[in-house]
Image 1 (cartoon, rainbow, N blue to C red):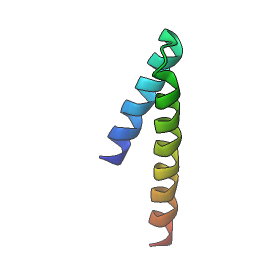
Image 2: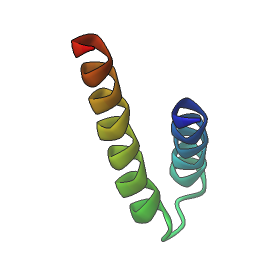
Image 3: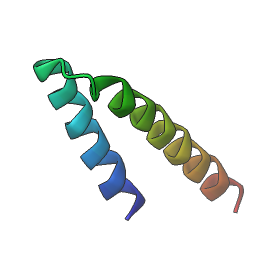
Image 4: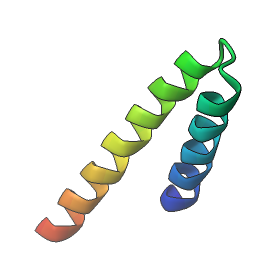
Length: 48
Protein backbone atom coordinates (compact mmCIF):
# COMPACT_ATOMS: atom_id res chain seq x y z
CA UNK A 1 0.00 0.00 0.00
CA UNK A 2 2.78 2.41 0.92
CA UNK A 3 4.64 1.67 -2.32
CA UNK A 4 1.46 2.31 -4.30
CA UNK A 5 1.05 5.73 -2.69
CA UNK A 6 4.70 6.54 -3.38
CA UNK A 7 4.40 5.53 -7.05
CA UNK A 8 1.23 7.60 -7.48
CA UNK A 9 2.91 10.63 -5.93
CA UNK A 10 5.95 10.23 -8.18
CA UNK A 11 3.69 10.07 -11.24
CA UNK A 12 1.82 13.18 -10.10
CA UNK A 13 5.15 14.92 -9.46
CA UNK A 14 6.35 14.12 -12.98
CA UNK A 15 3.06 15.41 -14.39
CA UNK A 16 3.55 18.58 -12.34
CA UNK A 17 7.01 19.05 -13.84
CA UNK A 18 5.68 18.55 -17.35
CA UNK A 19 2.60 20.76 -17.04
CA UNK A 20 4.13 23.41 -14.73
CA UNK A 21 0.84 24.19 -12.99
CA UNK A 22 0.70 25.91 -9.62
CA UNK A 23 -0.11 22.51 -8.07
CA UNK A 24 3.53 21.60 -8.76
CA UNK A 25 4.60 22.98 -5.38
CA UNK A 26 2.07 20.85 -3.53
CA UNK A 27 3.07 17.78 -5.51
CA UNK A 28 6.74 18.37 -4.67
CA UNK A 29 5.89 18.61 -0.97
CA UNK A 30 3.87 15.38 -1.18
CA UNK A 31 6.77 13.68 -2.96
CA UNK A 32 9.19 14.65 -0.19
CA UNK A 33 6.73 13.35 2.42
CA UNK A 34 6.36 10.08 0.49
CA UNK A 35 10.14 9.62 0.29
CA UNK A 36 10.52 10.24 4.03
CA UNK A 37 7.75 7.73 4.83
CA UNK A 38 9.30 5.09 2.55
CA UNK A 39 12.75 5.61 4.10
CA UNK A 40 11.32 5.33 7.61
CA UNK A 41 9.52 2.13 6.61
CA UNK A 42 12.75 0.65 5.21
CA UNK A 43 14.76 1.64 8.30
CA UNK A 44 12.16 0.24 10.70
CA UNK A 45 11.89 -2.95 8.64
CA UNK A 46 15.62 -3.60 8.94
CA UNK A 47 15.57 -3.14 12.72
CA UNK A 48 12.92 -5.81 13.13
